[in-house]
Length: 225
Image (cartoon, one colour):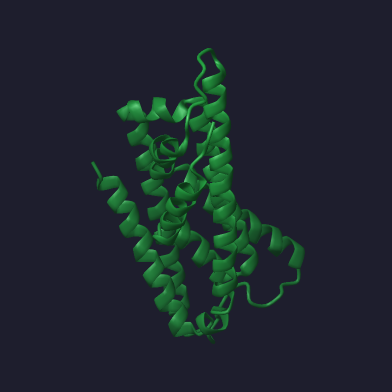
């Protein structure tokens, strides 16, 4: 039994460095509040754990071979991204109102700090989770890319399947941990931009840009054959 760890890590790093919906969700959440960014990062990686488990159980293969199931997941994911985009566009509209420059909604402590913190955590985690759970490309990664770095144990019997399942979990867990480290680094960088983004005009443009990016990505996924 052997696993091509070096090759797999290289592919994973390239995949993470190419911005996708999860990158945008984590970045936007982090500019709202670092805690929300970290929650979105953990939610996104939990979504990958769902795909990893599905791949190990063979459910991803069933979905990939069933056009109706695959299309349903794809369209749900696209609709959710458009939903996030519309929310960002509405936030841009609010930021454009000349009402004393509200800046970042979570920049100042509220009377119920603990409740606000829980709300940020739930919001960030759910956005990251749903973004990756409803991302068919994440499922295809565990179904088609990851197995290229898995080698069967040979020797006949039922041991080969168990060996491959263990390797899928090993590589999948490594993928998730790499993602957590990279997303937390992104959150730390984005946190330094919060003061800049607190300016009403900048906030308006930022929300507008991310909103249209979400809508464009969602529309592109929906239109993909």
